[in-house]
Length: 340
Image (cartoon, rainbow, N blue to C red; front, side, top):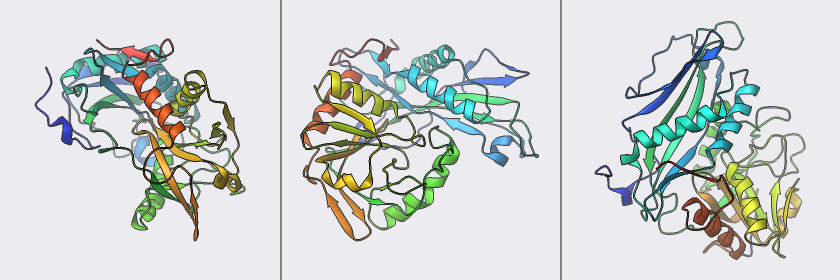
């Protein structure tokens, strides 16, 4: 039985659900964790998360399939990426099997908030970890809290995925040898001002170039880039300061194994972007957002795929991957985690 929610008019915002998962780390170990009703967190004003931003997070979705199953897509990958983030931020790794179990329990407990099949909506899950004990000297916390909450969200694109226009940013998203390759909250704080400026100027997103040379494509504030050459090769930028998107890695596998495309994961020079036939941004929220135009300080790069719809290669990848997520196409073993 679903909650009495107008599923067709959901946006991408927070709606409080009934339950969330909480586990605490103290004296060198995680407790057993529990599903709780309380959505409030009480911390010292000197908690490390407030003073030195010791925090990381993840994002994934649960869906209802055509045959009524509730499923999640590759939660083990989110678990591993969060473990990598935690290690870089001197935080304790939350065990992968325990992470997947916590995802399972949160979705199961809030199953009435999982949107029905066919609405285009989903249940978005936000796992996160914070340093909780008071820290005033610059050092890591030694007590932490891991939580997962969830909220129903509408489809990212209402009425179809229209190509967007983005701009080349003058700001740097991440420093060489910095934290750009982990999902730390501080990375997203860095992108808030540039995205606000981009929106004020009429652009949907920023394209960040590498901070070292400003000659290579990195990513946007919250998504990886994908490109398609005129001969149908999928190209994704490679860099030590790009977040390893789970969607991007899934797209590469789908393109090669299901769509018969050649796939290259390599450095992408900004000078070659004008020669690509298709461009998109990929991530959990939209899966793929097609890009029709890039504005570079007075010069426009217009992709042959145009501003009306996804390019043919991008659409084939999108349809195949979303088909796997919804269990309409049989995907690789282990990609779909069945809740019930």
